[in-house]
Length: 341
Image (cartoon, rainbow, N blue to C red):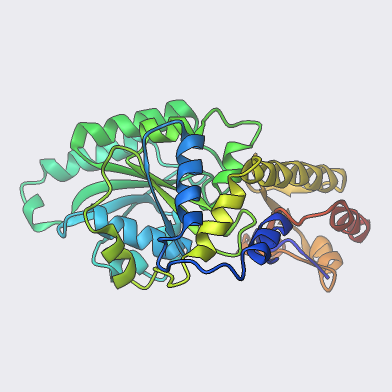
């Protein structure tokens, strides 16, 4: 059985695992005060080519909930696409932390700047808006839940709307490695620093055992942010675990090499699918491929290939998501090809 269910189905990239083993017996301070956390933060800042503040957290859901809670006032909520991860797949973590998600329609997972502007303008035009949840932030992800990408122009337009209304722009980078390395991407880490108030560099879905690196871009890290992290259960006593991993990820371009491998194997996967007449649910240029599978394809895959059951279109067709990652091999793809014959 070969699995393409997600990009974190295998453990940890060998270069990171080796670094964890090499440093295993070295005594270090706890809670992120070790030399590897400091080194990782400096390397990430250097990769951004900007003066930024970096903090290391345990996972994506914790990161989303904590960043939003720390950066918003208690009467503010966060705008997101209806398909946004914080709206549909995080068990109400943002609301549990005290802030409402304000979902608006998107297209192929993306928000449109004009739609955001219209929503916020309507909010302030409402005479009763003091009785409502104020929009204080816009949440986007890169790539989106559907593997699609914002262009630099689209993200610039959203950032302009945020500035117009005094809102913060937060970019979820759980799969950022695959977004940046996509052949269709025109965005760099430096661009994200210029356009966003905060974003994070996902490790969990890019070869790390766990961990996300939050980047505050405007000297705007909330005061006592460590307190927010600990109070919400996302501070590791053995903070070295995150530091060693991100130090390895940002040594010798490992993070970007992992992203590129995911892109190249996804392209090979799509070539295989196309040869077998597959129909695609959405055009994704990243490591996620959304295939409309009929009963014949589902039967061939059963017991051989695992993919994520994304949604049921009708009685005959199901959307499957195939994700590639650092561990996806040519042998995996050749097996998929044989199964579909």
